[in-house]
Image (cartoon, rainbow, N blue to C red):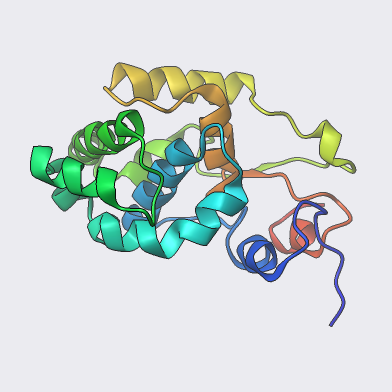
Length: 189
């Protein structure tokens, strides 16, 4: 079936991510952590690069088990920095570990990271109605607010652009173009 998609990816890898994940409201703790880490690693790179390495990241980071990642020490950091299947950046690896600890503290305080992150949109996705890719912002006032809140809780690599990408990926905001079949599926008017 030929469906109109957002025009940001023309290969199977992008199509699968676009059609099955991007913008779909997410309420899974492990997936929240996975996407937060991957979006941090994506900084300065293309999302396609991350998608191509996603399985290697899952293996390297113990399937994004937040409790395991929070306990990583120098030996595991050294192992990760030698892993050619992932992005080998010490700052990003350290941020993933630091963010795991902050993620768990948020879970302890709010019952779940899901409860916390969705509270920023009153548990209802923001429905945008963009017709062109160039209308979609890289960051918003809300992404700046969430970024500051996460930084205050000890996270890093959670700037407003990374957080807006996270908001899009987990469905806090529906930024599928109005011409895209997913826009309406995800509640767009």
